[in-house]
Length: 535
Image (cartoon, rainbow, N blue to C red):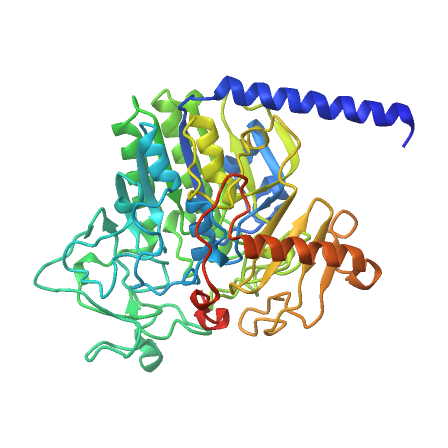
């Protein structure tokens, strides 16, 4: 690089830093509404603005057209429970035992009293709500679904909650509003089991004649709405949800919250269930794509986004609302149901140009769509900044001017200027997780290291490459974003450096400057492989 080019580059970077500092100073203490739209298993290549042609997503595309679309954004994990834990707590989920994919009757894994995005914003005067998928556990032990269900979202900072307890393929298939199951008939109490079958309950694998959707792997236990599920439920018949109307139900509850508190600062965590299995779109969305139910439920999800945007505009609060749309992990086609997702996929590439998918350490497992939209405050832009969902907590703290304590958000970095598209500078590095807590990778601006890791190379049920290998894998993402060529042997110094960085992040117990939480001992870290139950 010539001297003049070096000087220009320094001037450009200084200008961006000055702009970024100015943005943060201008917004410090401001309290816009914050709406987080969190998709479930939506791949990098599933959205029109990220290259999809087979699935129309006009509302998500609008957010990207009018906001900032990020090309290097990451969930913390390639599966849902740990990603949601990292998002809300600002802690890499692999630090805490028990953050693997949870069964539907698991206890709450976020300690009540711990600082979360919701509790921090409550302290800043926000009205807070979660609507949609939870999957972070409920209760503190053997849960009685027929009484008060606590602790749950309300004990970790949310003022209002209307949730599915886990996933739409897990029993119990009921909604929980605040502390109680919605629509429960006391004369028909709920019993849930994730161990032995419940006497008198029909088992999916034994009664295929009762099913309107076939399973391919797993999902052969309880039956709800003619769909086989994971886990068993007895009773609660009147409370069982209808899969076809789930999207409408979530939208209705979310919009009602916006309407009720339009004059207050609002934090809405809108956690959609699409395109997670079972994929059962409302009849008005059936056939909207040539891809079958998977494509159709993504169109349905886009409709949900549109309804939320329309409500913000109708209520006159869009210009003081920051909307972030992203996904909990990468895509999967056959995830346990025979819904033609594989046979009808055609030329569609759910992961874009990336390798792997849900459950994988490769890029498609954790590199996800990420769009930031705030009318009048965010200018349309494309950003290559390296950003991570684990930074959500520190970033909103920076926005509203609430300081984090040393025990808070151990891995969350304040990233407001980057998230608003005002700075091209994001993180220097980020750690991501595959299907299990020990299956980690570290990414810098150029390099990605997958340390040697036990486990199968491929998930035999889904056909997805998991990124596990007995040797280190190093990829030059600047030249090889598809991770096709392992260059570890050619760059031993880079491998050594990244190994050392990852080891330090793990041993320190935190990576945010100023954080200093208690470090967990090795005895608190059970075998990670034992955590995986399949999702």
